[in-house]
Length: 320
Ligand code: NAD
Ligand code: UDP
Image 1 (cartoon, rainbow, N blue to C red):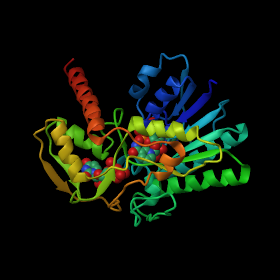
Image 2: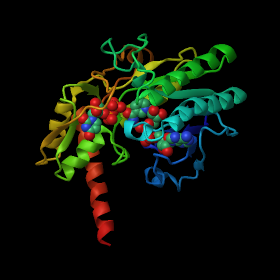
Image 3: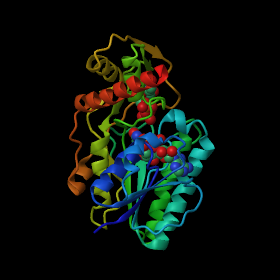
Image 4: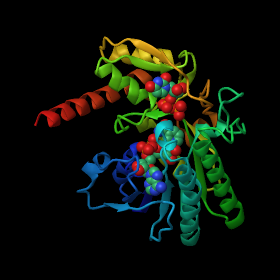
């Protein structure tokens, strides 16, 4: 049955891929975004689709719509952008969650929250299991995002317990792919742009700390599987690729795959930057039958291609 689905943050990196997938699954999609870190170019191809609509709106302001499901993704996700206006980041996480939960509760519809591996902070348990409560600095420079997302999870579970609302909570681990913003400071986009421009790749710290990178198509498949999982499964569930990589290995791989002659420089590690991160995905495998399929090499090659085309078109525009 065709559903009318609201995607908040739908013009962002993950949101734009999700809107495309939901349309392919034969739904009507309403993308709501204030474009603070999103980009209209991410959804340009969808604009002529009669089943797709955009609303420019800030999720911290209540919204009334007639819809069947909500995916709540609105929130800047890169440390550089969420630290630019930390108070607005918390408001987006908390007031945004309340507004979307109120709407879902009024309509008695299912709502999915894009939570994050950042709820585990700088973890003592490795790989991270959903039962782990995390180690987050409540007053640090990353807290506006980490604590905002933790509070949003609390709100989701309180609405579920108090109002019997159908909720789904995904803890998303580092995701990469086409439509990442080239200047949002995340490691994959930074390294690829630096490699393509033959600039030195900037490693923060000694590069021995780790992340586990998931290609965006895999992630979006995980989000829709979670939304369509049995009603009694709320999550939280980790969604990510469990292939753990050091930042230095990532830099070397990107230099190799892009055929670049760039070198590497080491800079200061930002405060509270987690040392290790890798999802335990047993729950996602068992309950959703989901596991990331795309290898880091394969995903990086696609992402490098995307950024190469983007840089070439930027170059052409600046010559015209
Ligand atoms: P993104 O910054 O590309 O997308 C976020 C989108 O939300 C943007 O289009 C932005 O304009 C919009 N937005 C921000 N504040 C808003 C507001 N107040 N009202 C309306 N729209 C607003 O980030 P992304 O990587 O696509 O992340 C999407 C979601 O997934 C976020 O909630 C993020 O926390 C979560 N997540 C992402 C990752 C990742 O690795 N990309 C990891 C964990 C969790
Ligand atoms: N990082 C880096 N060089 C960069 C950008 C990021 O070494 O140019 C590091 C960053 O300090 C962190 C890791 O790469 O340890 C992942 O950073 P990102 O911002 O992509 O995601 P997050 O820290 O939120 O996992």
